Length: 375
Ligand code: OGA
Ligand code: NI
View (spheres, rainbow, N blue to C red):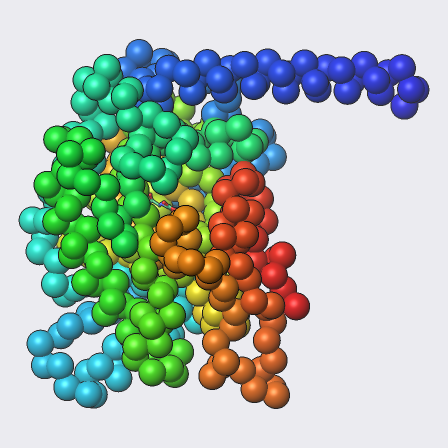
């Protein structure tokens, strides 16, 4: 290729990057997210959301529909044998799938349903009220945002998100919107209780003392998100949320009955079939790090649909990472009891603030920060 020709091409690429950036800003400045586009009755998915041809996702019909197992953490006949069976089930799911569904978890179905309704009510509020919460600051209080990685991803995702830090403390009640305040407080309380139990079971599944992951502070910080995936006029050209792994230790996810969540299993996308009353647990990068690769964080994504909205609520269990939470920066490495001569550490100790900074300064679809901390 001649030099002048190459320069022209680069110039064209720069122009198109520039015009994309302008379009992203315009979209962001509406403060109304994808819901705003749907309310304006767009018939076509705008350019900024279109994934390039070679990245087109498989349609759900191409997929393997094999389903995975469920575990029942607090079966009433709480005998040691039952617990052993549960722990064994979790260990198998974590090694094989990186995710599992939990039933009989003790959170009443009415609370799950109301949580989904609370997220829906918020996203469907009067635009002028909703706009006041729109911000890219995810730390200081309750927020609404569309696409955390809007300015970094190759294509924007067809979803909006509300949320707040939920542990150690929720924002003061008066900062939470009426549409979702009461249920958010109640749901978060329930998830905190459940997360302790799940971390105990995961500790046992790793062969550790039941309290180990809780003592390590794996659930000390929590971020609660309420996602809204509007009905999409052209689901084949965009994505609900792009293929990613979570930075958390684990994520506890409540999804409605619409479907669209998929996990990558042996190089195939597998639907996580919605199951009424169940919660999905998926393992994140930090658990992979402290377990020294015994448990693997799983890639997952959400495919958009013509029907909707689809609503999900994700609670990310993380260490304390915010200023004021701890005096010294928390550092996590492979848990010593899991190491031996045959099983040497595959990660160095990671400063979690650095880990999170890397995680959130990239597009969701870029490689996970785990790579930076490999031995
Ligand atoms: C997430 C996520 C899946 C869903 O929030 O990280 O993967 O079903 N959500 O919304
Ligand atoms: Ni995720």
